[in-house]
Length: 223
Image 1 (cartoon, one colour):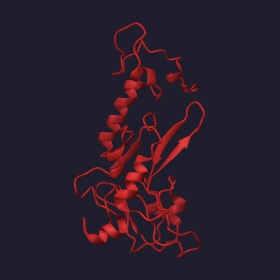
Image 2 (cartoon, rainbow, N blue to C red):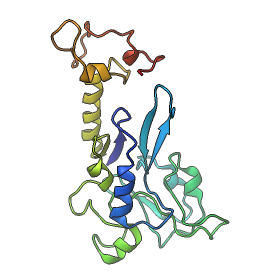
Image 3 (cartoon, one colour):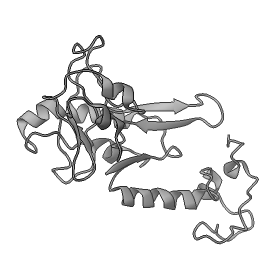
């Protein structure tokens, strides 16, 4: 189970952030998901929704001295607050800044670590009151998507089986971009200059796409 955020679709609405906080009734100061804007205010500006990416080889899991972080059968990275000692090792190891603590300070004074659970709860029995109090709602046990991905209005944030969401993203890139480049607003939403349809699928040369256009050039940004 993985997350993918399509930066071509993210509009920095912070709906995913709000959905997460409301769904799990998170404490003040805890944001399991946040939206980061790159190149703010200049051509090429992009926004990306960031949370725990549920890494296959999770660095937080490797450094935890109490083994409170673990993988589920679905590959979701969860943790046990009963075992957490607030050391902060996971906080320093995670490249996405996912692990959070309610307090700042020295060892054992940070409180119990909190992070995105992929809406899969924790080690307590599924959908139990104890699980909800510690980790929030278990939507996976209910057969639902994570709240952030389900709420996303532009479907920029995809969450679910890694192979399925990767295939969805690949199709999007093929439709709007040229080769490995992700630019393709005109290709996805514009009209061909000489009529006909854009050749957006397959490995054959796309003769009716201009590789020098800003949407296909890695050194230029569309305005």
